[in-house]
Length: 141
Image (cartoon, rainbow, N blue to C red; front, side, top):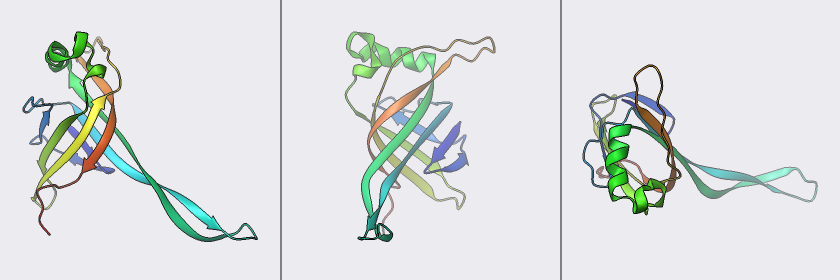
């Protein structure tokens, strides 16, 4: 499995991904991140005098085997997974320092479809509409 978290790539065969209550769905890949829009604060001379942060923007994808997609379609309204309300995606893995990381992503699918290729891999990458990302929710400060 390929895991990309906030731009950092992990080789994480031991990652456990739970999606909408389906435990350990074993996706081929999952990526999620957020960033903030940044803007200049300008003066009369139109030169930047400072900066400010705008709204948080999310992006994410998940690549699922088609057998998992089929299981999700069974409880989706009329079989359309894009019509499922936002659900939690829980990603648990060990980082490079051998610390347990537990991320929580609230998201929904943006569409539906199939990819069937000649190489035998029956999987599909789905764009996620992300509502919230909480990184390392189990960590205490």
